[in-house]
Length: 249
Image 1 (cartoon, one colour):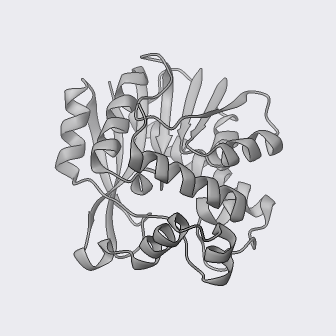
Image 2: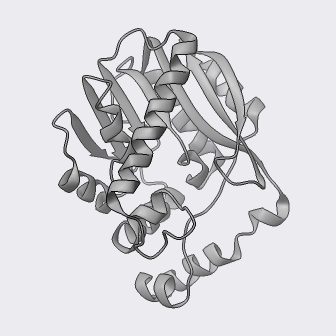
């Protein structure tokens, strides 16, 4: 079933996959408009996953390392890094242009990439030993869709597995307006090219969303999973409250 807001989000991420995929995935100062060095870009993924695996040892999880899921994989920055630790690393993204690029540049035979534009994940239950998602759910356009994905993470997580996901917990009202993103969407609907909007008018379509911590915890618990820890982070920026959740079942 097509969900209009999700299909629009897909269209916008297809735009960014063609325009500036590295910056769209990891928006660090000085990297916009194709200024990311590819080796440095992937090195950040290696560092992030190494830190993740070190944090996972606190919980002695996951119990097995057969298969990992990188939700919102983009061009595979984290998927390839996960491939060092797991028998198979699966990257999933809404954007065909991102996934196509990921497949082109992937150097690891144990990584595969999947396109999905539905609120249900195309995987069986109890499939993954590790599920990781950071700076991704914050860009999902509706709160009910974020919660749907969280429920799907729990469904597809194996017993003795580890789910680690970052979700903003609050955005101040003045930061919810996002006028430049709204203007991009409006002008794009009128037929203005994505290149003109991004490179000439300096607009982009990337939205920010949040789900309060209590609601996230209720979704986790209703799926039969257990929250291990919820750690405040600044992954969404200094002015947005965010949490990284560690979950098992």
